[in-house]
Image (cartoon, rainbow, N blue to C red):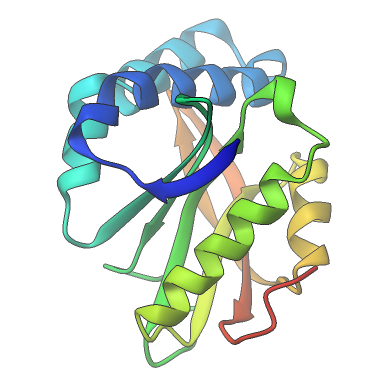
Length: 176
């Protein structure tokens, strides 16, 4: 049975493995091995995941099937770029589903859980950054009502990449 819950410290090791695997599955073919290695070493270790799980301005959701992590999302509300206008914006920093679970509705269910969490925290606007070359993710977010309002630089190792900044209101209309 599939379930979504808040991550706890004992998830850090499995989350580190899942996070790096899903990131590599998504972006490795379009980026250099050196940039991927640099980014992953700084971003997806167990200690980093533990710190993020414990960070008060971040909320990590994990999706599991029979005790195994299959997807995750990380929400933040500690900053927003100038193009994001809202009284209390929240960010979906990461939302990844393990490749064997693509096409099974997990991403939609996880997105709905993210929106519920942001609504419960009184966020009025949700924003996210998505790589300009990640058309699949862009299409997914647009189905949820996200629209482009700007861009920012995302450093992947030594490569400065352009992320589009997408926003939508946070309300009770969570479906796609």
